[in-house]
Image (cartoon, rainbow, N blue to C red; front, side, top):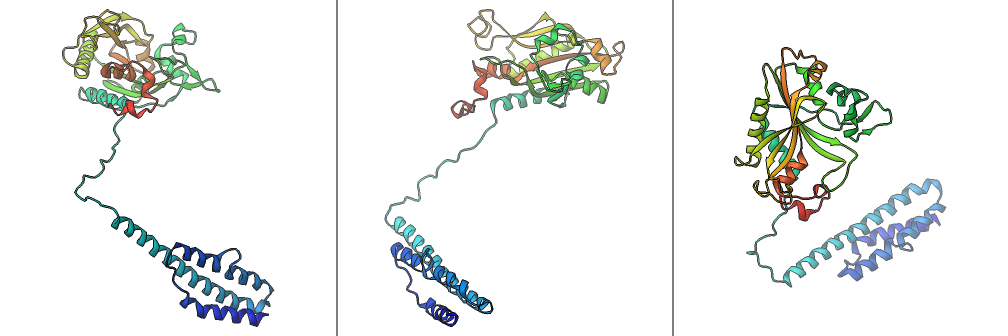
Length: 342
């Protein structure tokens, strides 16, 4: 039996070079089935090897692999040749005008929120502000206490906070925690812009549970509300144009005193009054004020020597006004029909 199997393997090895080259896919499939199929010649011989004496298996195994390699080479070469012939036949059978323009490639672009954030950063760095970032998972101390929110302060209820299981940590509700962190790290004088993501339990056409905010502040000697208004007026004019009017209204924020909100003349109607501005001609865009002495103290800065102003704004709101978008959720739905407009 062993001698017969080896003899058949030797005979197959000798016949392999003369196997007819397949002329089409039908002949190729027939060749593959004949030699390599489940009941083909090579699998059957492989099963017969199980009955060979141990000392003859290496010789038989080597012969079987040589036969398999020869057959697979013929099949691979035939497959390649038939594929090339099919492509050439398709080309010869069709008219192709090489002077036609190619397909225009599709290029990506910056997201509108990224574009607005970069524009804002460019405006403020041009005025001498440095960019700083802080952690999105923040401590209660930096998110609230260092910013003049005592544990029982009712203003904490304004934040709609995502608290983490360990209670002492939370997802930051604003980028303002960068303010005391930067004070501790650098000391005055200091001008910082802190852009980033923030999180609040809120979701509707004008609010998102995840949104982007920019916190900015300046600390120096003899800083006044006039410096704050001049800085913000310069910013608004560069973002929306020099004809945009601004005004400050008194408001309350725990980390500033006095506090104010900045309004701009309605971008949609030019201040004449429309549905967007509720016929007032004004739109509120950010909160600001003089840094509270308690916040300066939390940053190890003497409020009797240094003073400063701070402001915070939502990127989505500024982008909605800049581009005339009426639903904040459009920025996050990844609808290419919407995003391609920018």
